[in-house]
Length: 298
Image (cartoon, rainbow, N blue to C red; front, side, top):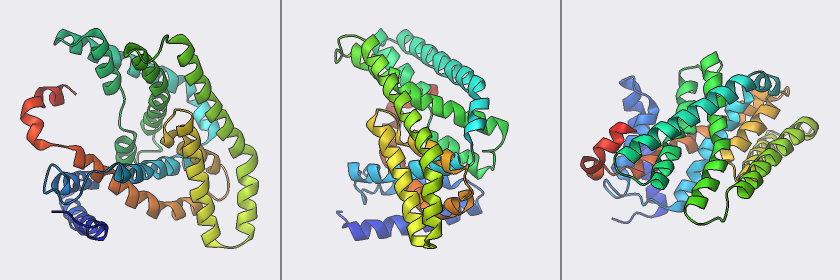
């Protein structure tokens, strides 16, 4: 049954209202409600909503705004003070997870190259899932919450060497060293540019915008800064979420933090719900009996 765009929006809104209300009554996280909606209405369920690239692209902005609001709770001095723990903990987690999973995959018969790809994929966590759960449990400002966010940011950066090595294994690159150095250089450039812009441009910009006394202009400026930062890191090979986090961290040091958080929250919550729905659309429960052992291992 092929639903038009308007009908699809109605289906998603109705399903979200009913499911989230039901799951909250059962004291279950709303994330499970969104995933259940995706499974039910997606192509592997009732087939009411098609799983299109456009839907995934729109849903990605939910993660962008989530990481932006989390960045508002951090500050650059706090992040620098945690750098030893984050680099050590993040590096250890990624290394141990990659090697352990790759070794197990090799034992069950995968080639060394394929085993490395599986290990690299399973070493990375879902930024959206972990940070959303920490936010709901009011644990973002705890020590373990901040360390978890730091490890997730390390994983975002670790994507660069993983992609370079995987490309080399697949024959898409002649060597590893030079592409790896270029990728890391781009990542460092993106982070440095965002931190410099945040320190010397954002505060004066928002002072001028606040002087205009226009709530619409203020909200538009917040959206623009968030999306520019996300686009900047994405263009240089990093995740959009990392750019949004850095932009939020820079704006979190200004006196406009609370107003910014209030303005961005509606966009974040709606689009983040859409993100988890699209994740649910990818789940094919009919294939579970054939791959249950891989799911259990993961």
